[in-house]
Length: 133
Image (cartoon, rainbow, N blue to C red; front, top):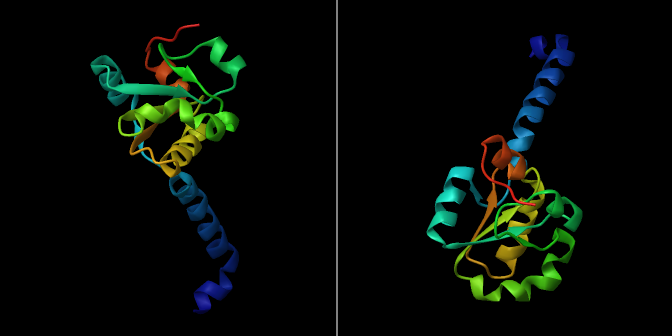
């Protein structure tokens, strides 16, 4: 116990740095698919791609056949996706953060097979996968 009291600043630093390392893991929510898994589903024709970025971002480049529904409009436009409730839906954003939020919203709306593209469009592009404008 004396060791902890004598070295309180080092112990605090250790706890803070450990927490900082765990924080991103704890932040992740929802189901994720890799770019490889997504391309396999796309090639089978069994998936709806929902790009939750803003229209300006979408116009700069998006995955082929993706439907653009900005995250802020998702709840009001969920009726457009009703026929996909029991099929695969992959939400896409720039880095994977907004799509994780979209995944949670779609699950709350009753979608059973909804996933977020892990790493978003940045990872998609980094792996050399096609993007259309």
